[in-house]
Image (tube, rainbow, N blue to C red; front, side):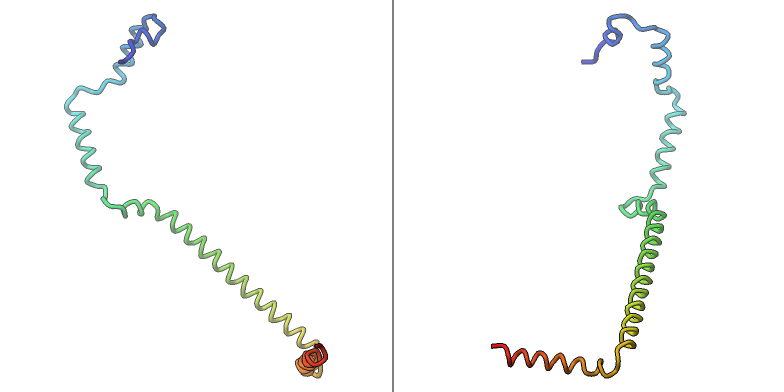
Length: 124
């Protein structure tokens, strides 16, 4: 049950000028031309709207393009950095190989095998 308007004002009567002004401002227009124009506008909007789940994708396109560009930029930077790290590791390996004498580099694997064989024969 809706409360009486006098109950909303604590038992006192509201100002009739304010009540009339509020009713006039929220009242629907009575002219048939308004309702005909409103119906025409609604039907026009409905006819222009694409139906289907894919119709919402059109509004996402600018955001998707920006996201794809950011993803491509991050992927490119990651690949560039990986290549830079690989080149640096190759350079460091070349420096170590250049600093190692040829005789030591050639003898290293043999001495490792010899030490492993000696450890196997000596240890019970």
